[in-house]
Length: 249
Image 1 (cartoon, one colour):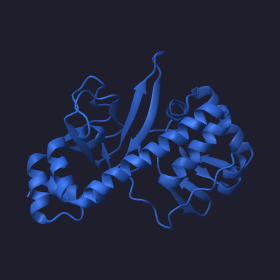
Image 2 (tube, helix red, strand yellow; image 1 turned 90 degrees about the vertical axis):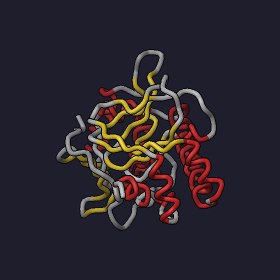
Image 3 (tube, helix red, strand yellow; image 1 turned 180 degrees about the vertical axis):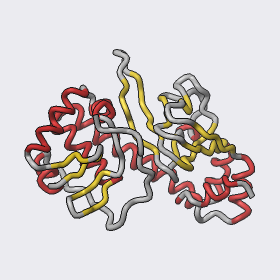
Image 4 (tube, helix red, strand yellow; image 1 turned 120 degrees about the vertical axis):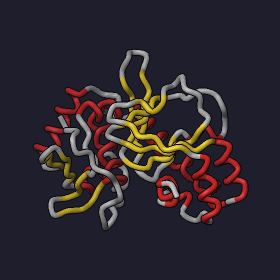
C-alpha cells in the first residue's frame, strides 16, 4: 500500500472511510513533493483536483494590482485546499506556494465528488471547511476595512493564537514563525509598520519576541483592546509543523 493511504487516513475528512473506499481514492490520487518556495499552482492553472496537505506548510495568496502579495491563509498537514475545484471547473484564482519542504496529495475532483455522494461525513466535512474559511475571510475583511494597523495586527495575532497557540510558562507561544513582511502581507500593511507596532506591544508587555518566536502574554487584554472574545487555546500543542528557518525580521 502506498504512503498516500496513510496520508488520507490521517486527514479528519477521510478517517471514517472503509479500507476499500480509502484504497480506491488512493489509487486515483498522486503525491508530489515541493521544495520551499516552489509554486504548487498559479491563477492560470486548471482546477481539476483538490489538494491534501500531507507534510509541510503552504500559503495561499493573491498579487494585488500594485504587485504586492496579499496572504489569504496557511495550509497545514491534514488540511484540504483548492477545494473550489469541486464545484466549478476552470482556472485557479490564487497562488499556492510551499513555505517549506512539503508533500501534497492531488485528488481528482470527480473522485472526491463521487465519494461525497455516498459518504455524508465527507460531504458535511467539506461544507463545514468552506463555511469556516468563509467566516475567517469575512472577519479579516471587516478588520481590513474598519480597523487601524495596530488593531489589524492584534486581530491577526489572536487569530494565529487560536490556530497555532500553545500555553507555556510565559504566555501563549505561536507555533508558526512568520516574518514581519508575512504579517504585513496578511493585514494589508507594510513591514516597517508591523515592526513598529510589534515593538510598541513588546514595550507595553503585551508580547515577547524571543528566538524568532512570538509569545503573547496578555490574551484577554489584547482581545478586549479590539473588542473581540479571547481565543480558546488548546490544552496541548496542536499538530502543526513549525517553521525552522523563517524569522520574525
